[in-house]
Amino acid sequence: MKFAKKLMALSLAAVMAGSCLTACGDSSKADGGKSGDENTIVIGGSGPLTGGAAQYGVAVKNAAQLAVDEINEAGGVNGVKFKLVFEDDEADPGDKAINAYNQLKDKGMQVMLGTVTTGSCLAVIDKTKSDNIFQITPSASAQDVIKNDNAFQVCFTDPNQGKASADYIADNNIAKKIAVIYDNSDAYSSGIFNTFKSEAKEKGLDIVAEQSFTKDSKTDFSAQISAAKSAEAELLFLPIYYQEASLILAQCKSADFTPKFFGCDGLDGILSVDNFDKSLAEGVMLLTPFAADAEDEATQKFVKAYKEKYKDETPNQFAADAYDGVKIIAKLVEKESIKGNMSKSEICDKLKKAITDGFSYDGLTGQGMTWSADGAVSKNPKAVVIKDGNYSAL
Image (cartoon, rainbow, N blue to C red; front, side):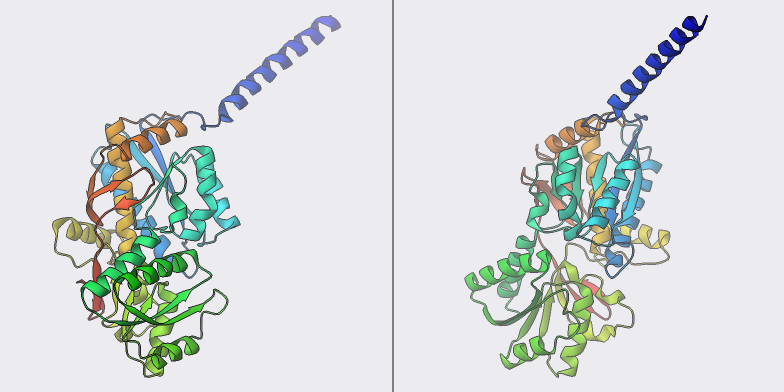
């Protein structure tokens, strides 16, 4: 009797162990296994929802959710609906970005919209490659964020922004004598500046002052402004983020230095800085693929829907890029008849093929957008000027 009980116990243990091994084996597949719902695809995103760059992350999250809601309310894509999960990475280029990515995986992420900022994106790109998850970032613009074949951008790369800025300034005869203040500790800022400098030379622009700062010295710009003023610069090029730009504008006024100002997409958000005197930004020009006051039907429809959903907040370029990003994913899913019960890896392979195989998208941030295998987007740059406290297309 004792022998029979012992044999039964051993048999039960063997069955349980076998079940555990089978389950564990399924969940540890390199491609992430299968989803439980063929009619739902989970899009994951991360960005700064708190901290100094929160305007970017909140805008991306809001617009992505708006796009998901619109798709789902219309019945989804071939019956497949989307779910957005989003984590705060605080624009951190290290552990916080990695932790946010891991949390998204735990929540079932199958496609990644993100990250929002370059530093955080650089922290996770090799992980998305290892996991073979399709990644399209709305706004991380460094060239290295698309070094792997699973990664794509909605925004321009930093080199493209630098070249386009120099071309716009030269082709429109905005100024000849240029001073630059950039963050040499930041990949975004340095990447734009290096290409701007090269293109400016080709275009006959004279960079009369090159001034830099670091993340540890970004509150007092008196020395940089003094150098630009002494060099009699006609235009101050600012390939930096809006927080530092707002300080520079205020300190230029104190120094009685009144050049023209030109920046890139990092300046988008300057009008929302707490306690910032918006009159200081009057006439500031910046490259951006989106202006909320544009008169085309798609822009006005998006702006109206965004304001209704988010307490009359006007969407910025980051919101527009994110909205386009979700809609691009949806079009690719439709093109490849992708279902939610496919593995992450299978979804990634299908999306990679689809986006580089004659795919074109007309969105808020560009008409006829296309992508090559290097992950960079091809679209025409636009510029806006701040006028009467709002962005106006140039």
